[in-house]
Length: 112
Length: 114
Image 1 (cartoon, each protein chain N blue to C red):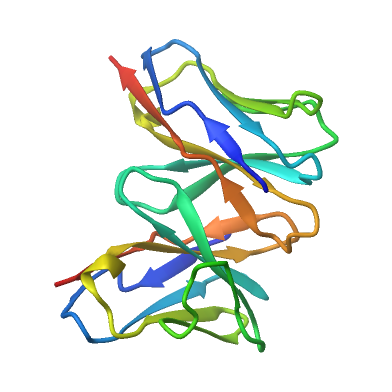
Image 2 (cartoon, each protein chain N blue to C red):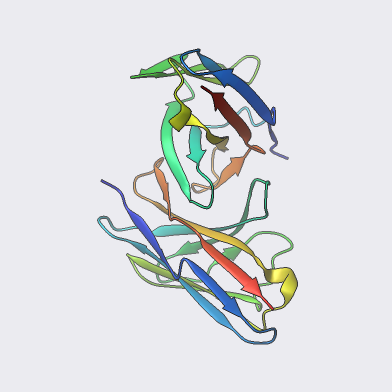
């Protein structure tokens, strides 16, 4: 079945870049997503990438996709304390009707 | 924008009672809505897919008679937890599909069953 894996924790200093990694197993995934969750809140869609793309950049966010290795990463440039949150990657499998499979989430801690 | 609301944001109920949670897409129509459950410090677990005008599709292991889902309109889906027990205490999050690939999440509802 589908499986999405992420490392659980990442700690960086304010101003540094953060890189959050994710691996997935469903090679038929059409879209891959990054969501941000702050404590006690729902999920905020940060960005997504179509499976035939290698990279997508959106302001401070850069998504890299290595389809051969089924590896997805999210780079946050100039990380701020407000970026502290849990980041989930998710895949939408082909023919799944929009169903998302989430990773465990990576808790990003930004120290001043 | 794409805003999804949930009501209530938190609820405390007694064991054995039923609780209804509403999920609304405020500025777009959603033919498909999804209900997730999240335990503390854990990922989201998809419970069911709700399609407007038809029966919900439940994930394996989710009791459809316990978690009743109704998707009465293109902007509203409801989840009713029937005969709630303490083990049903959790954070319930809905999402609504705006296009074929964009899914927007509500702020979540924290349910505590005493």
